[in-house]
Image (cartoon, rainbow, N blue to C red; front, side, top):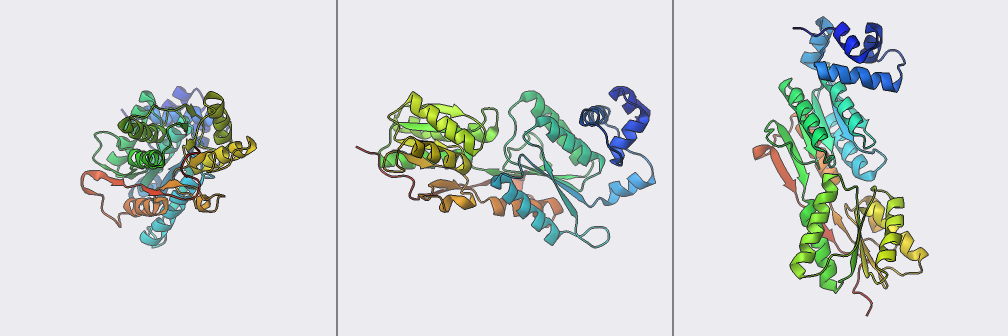
Length: 348
């Protein structure tokens, strides 16, 4: 049976006019009401009918790029590179560029699903999801179902820095080798003689956090070194600052701090300096990602380079079809250890 606008209105407990306003985006609607309507659209799998929507379905020029935080260089670099590649390699129905829209979720799983619903309704030509995913079974199942609906409707789906949705061969995935990168970083510190290493991790419910922490632990276990204290927090400078103070409280004799990313590492460096400790003479510090500022930090930051710009550009080409998906749909992008001045042999 065909789902109607009235069915959506009944499910969302609003008027049909409100549903129309939300779907057309031509009138202000409260955020909570918008979320309720879009949830009903998703649950009922409602699709607009009529000649205009049929035309849009056949010739969509829209590509969505989902990011966790556009202000974070990790996401900004990938999104910018993807948008450039989309503009260079695609032509719309009038011969112009496709419209690449960056969707900032703010780390909210609800917003992620809402954007996917909106892109499905707009018959997006492609969707690029960047960064790690939330490790919540219910959310992962909901995202998987949504991506299946998108690909079944002809939308290209590209994961950039995000694990592949299991069993979905129609999705192209560019995954970062976070485990190997973290393992090499820990091995570097161990080779310098560090045995008391603290770890400032990202949010515990994110795949990127888990993979990096697993690589770190693998290196320690292989060397027979006991794991030091670990503190979880957001991927931001404030978290690095507060978590490093907590690490020092738990283990005052730490000789090295590994940070979840370069931004967190800056906070760690600030906390150590405020405690009167020198980097790297008293405590070595290392980050992850090789964000543009890492080489200009004082001292320059030892880190693990992820080719964010190259990955974003490749995701853009996959989205517009100017590059073919890799065999099996998945490419693992290696991580490169960059040794700079923020790490040295531990104090005796």
